[in-house]
Image (cartoon, rainbow, N blue to C red; front, side, top):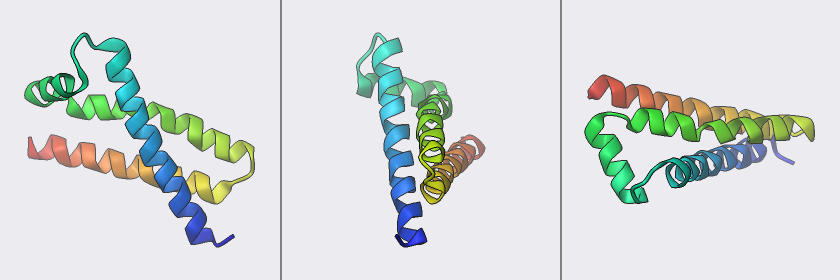
Length: 95
């Protein structure tokens, strides 16, 4: 398959894993609803931490792709993690 297509697939998997991880963390460890938790995280300046905790699931996707010899997809997951880190950094600098 085309390398660029494989990286894009990995990137999409990384974004989905990050989103799912963040929602899973909110559902498991918050007494509030999803929207209320995000609003509280923004108000208290913890949205970056919340996104970083959600990115833990990217580790599963990354090592899963490496295990099945899909290196280009693993690069896409790494790229999604890097984009998440840059968004968190930009949020911290602007806040």
